[in-house]
Length: 511
Ligand SMILES: Cc1cc2nc3c(=O)[nH]c(=O)nc-3n(C[C@H](O)[C@H](O)[C@H](O)COP(=O)(O)OP(=O)(O)OC[C@H]3O[C@@H](n4cnc5c(N)ncnc54)[C@H](O)[C@@H]3O)c2cc1C
Image 1 (cartoon, helix red, strand yellow):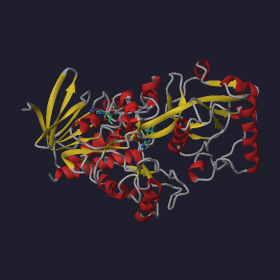
Image 2: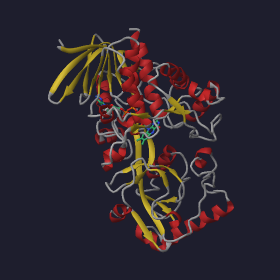
Image 3: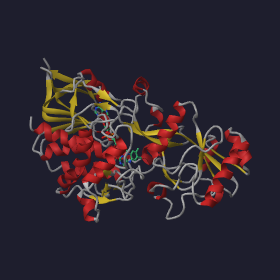
């Protein structure tokens, strides 16, 4: 017999995009909802995102901006890049579901989005769009709402570098802040921080609630209609990473400390099937003075070299493709970490990285920690980073030759719209010729693991026979991602989380 401390229609676990959107949907559908968030802040990894974008083809915001995409084209693109690694009906549910979700959200004045062109990540795939299928939440000034500002996680500059809290919510913080404001309109909404889900409660084969903790106290919450697990990935749990073979380390993952995989474990304990457990949304990671390699993107110069002083990839490729390239090469024994970005002094000693996500510390700090090196000659630089001098000289000479030709015959840098998105209209090939020469250390980072509980098209968690477990739902990085082993375009992680939590609650409402 469970001694229920609280009863609700829907229990939502986590407060990233999925948790916030799930709780909002429940409230708006007239249900009572309790959201439990493990950490001290709302927002999860979602709130760290500078964009907070969602990849939702043919949505109304894009249409109003003149977008002429069609769902058929978007499906063709998504199927082409994801392949048959995940069920096609799940892929279709994602591609088709985003636009109706934006219609639903936009009827609430508290929820606003704007276009933010961002090329699809496989520019040569059929029906890829150079302008993307991506929108972002409209920034939210909240100078007069310090409590809300304080309660939303991030930005990364505050948490990692002690920077002051801005009084405007942007990107993922705006998305979470907007949902929190929108929720204020509804009765029967309980939001608990510092309250992790510990385990699920099953009665007669159905999930009927959960045990949560708060400090030393454990409480049982009964959920009459369902429990939605939107608790992010298990990025911060090194034991789980190693058990399921996720490359990289928790330290270098971008998730908050609280993404420990308890919801995954709770789901598995009640019979959920899992998939894609070795997968994450990957990225090269610029190594910062705290020793953590963090998601970095929008490169505007430089080349990457490996331990042999050789170039190995198109450096301007989308971050997940770059990350996977590094992982594949590590797994095949061709590469070891760290790798280095080599660049010249034409823009000074700071590496040409447009978006570091974790704001840069002072240059001296990187130099002191041996993360950024400088030398008058390439041979001197090679010695400092421990690669063969002749190889590095030859690599840079070859790259400069390609710059003159205007074509990257070796790795195709500049061949796809994403490669050219941050060049300011210039070439993707920028020479490395003005000494002194610099090197910045990189490792591998991720934006969260993306393997998890298998679901059907409305987020119902499936058991190992493929049968839905009554009352249990999953979304976002707690579910096995519809996108499988690829990252089709910016906005897929947050889009997947928000959409499947929404669909889950709509389904739960019918129970
Ligand atoms: C800098 C940066 C930029 C990014 N930009 C984008 C972008 O523009 N678009 C995009 O789609 N993706 C982006 N991503 C990736 C994306 O932010 C995440 O993959 C996504 O937000 C994950 O969403 P989620 O809801 O699954 O989990 P999260 O947002 O991580 O939320 C999970 C929440 O659940 C809580 N939780 C965990 N365990 C428990 C438990 N047991 N009980 C209760 N609560 C629990 C966590 O504390 C956390 O608050 C970016 C990532 C970073 C770091």
